[in-house]
Structures are given as structure tokens and as C-alpha cells.
Length: 302
Ligand SMILES: N[C@@H](CCC(=O)N[C@@H](CS)C(=O)NCC(=O)O)C(=O)O
Image (cartoon, rainbow, N blue to C red):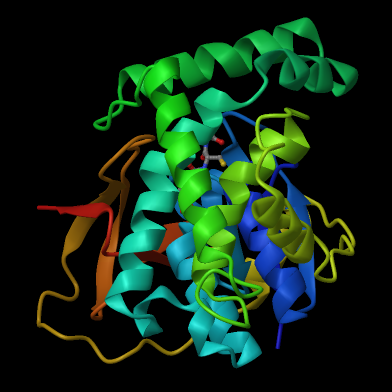
């Protein structure tokens, strides 16, 4: 079987969620580094234009959103607690909030100056300016409005106090990690580790828990080129489809995130399960691919 390929970039918090998960799951994976902002024409060949990062790939199956990616990792690793759909409602509600409201508060609470300095080490002023322009534009077109910096600081402080009180055991919901730990980790990683901010300093339990997550086997796998990832899609057939719930399969539809980065992907709906929609699309250079989306947080049109 082909390894999972992760299309990601270093400073992406949601990519960090998946890198940490892969480390914990102890799975082999291959890395494709992508640019921090579109256009990403090679990746678009696989996804059909989904704009968020990360994206995972196994042969000719493409997984959009960390909800579907973590379910794949859960299945590959035999760790069902890493798939959101196997968790209690309490965990699911916690993850939904951590991945949206708290994540946006974390982005606004990071140390922007340090992030800029870090970006400037590897990139031109022009590249950084394009990234900032892209993000302002993305926020302007979003359906969810992020809080202002002051409100974001309040959301973050309350969240940190809540985590501090939850951490009587090693992980948020018990002695072993669940998907909730990774969902709560990546936004805080962006503040503490990516932006070198001291905002988390007064929370010893949270810091010790973050260190535990960061310590999972975090060896970076070998880098492959985008061309190689397209070649893997070309060489493989999409895997067998799961049993669908309804008879809408076969229609041409467009699927897009409901919150921000709402670029739609058009294809033929070939499966609809409790959690997922799967679209078949013809990718110019690599034949038919199946693109998997979670139902939660996405809109199907028509
Ligand atoms: N719900 C998505 C959120 C992904 C997300 O917001 N990713 C950020 C990077 S961490 C993004 O795509 N930003 C815009 C971009 O990179 O072009 C998921 O769980 O994968």
C-alpha cells in the first residue's frame, strides 16, 4: 500500500495538528511542501481547487480537511479514538470549538512581529506581503467573523484556564490522547512555538501537556516533489467506495467549506456516507481521483 502523503507548510497550525497525529500514530508518511498561499496549481489538480491546507493523499484518494484526514489516520493506525465520529458528543463539541472559535482567537493572539521575522528568514518582502494580502482578503470573504484582538485574548485566557483545570490526567479526556488533544494543541503551538510568544507562560499544566504532545515521534519524513505526488495519483486507481446512504450519487455537485476559504470543488458525487461526501473528478495529468470531504462544516450545492 502507498504511504499517506501530506501536502502542508511549516507554519500551518492545522498541518501541525496532522504532523503531531502522524507522530503519535507512528505511521510512515511522505511530505510535500506547498506555498503558504494560492495559487497552488499542482495541488489544485488533485483537489479541484480546495484552498485550505493541509490536504492528504493516499494514491488517487485525496482528503480535504483535518476531520477526514484524522479519520484516515485513525483507520490506518487502528486507533479509533483519533476519529471524531467515534468520540462522545462532549469530545465532538470540544473539538468543534477548538478548531474554529479558539483557533481564530489563537491566530489573533500570536506574536505577529516574531512571525514576520521568522517568515523573512526564508522569504522575500514581496512573498510576505502577498501572504498578508491573501489572508486579509480571505478574512474579508469569510462567513465567520473573527473576534477583535481584545475579545480574542479573552477567549484564549478562558480556554487556557479551562484546559488547565481539565489536565488532572496526562491528556484532556483521559490517560491517552484523543483527537481532542490534537485539536486543542495546534492553535496553542502557533502561539507558543511558531510565534515564540510568552502568552502561555502562566499555565504550567498546559505547557507540560503541550510538551508531551510535541514529544511524540516527530521525525520529519523525506520530502517528495509535487510531481511525484501527481505520479502516485496517476499510478493508482481510487480505492473501492464505501456504501452510500442515499441515491443522490452520480450527480454533478459543488462542495465548499461553510466558514472561510470557501472555494468550491466540482465533481461527480459518487458516495455519501454518514460523515463524508466523495467526489470523482478527472485530473488533467493524473486520471480519475476521488476527493473526500467531511459533511460537517461543508456545504453541498445544489
Ligand atoms: N477546517 C480546516 C481548516 C484548515 C485551515 O484553516 N488551514 C489554514 C492553514 S493552518 C489555511 O488553509 N489557511 C489558508 C491557506 O493556507 O491558504 C481543517 O480542519 O483542515
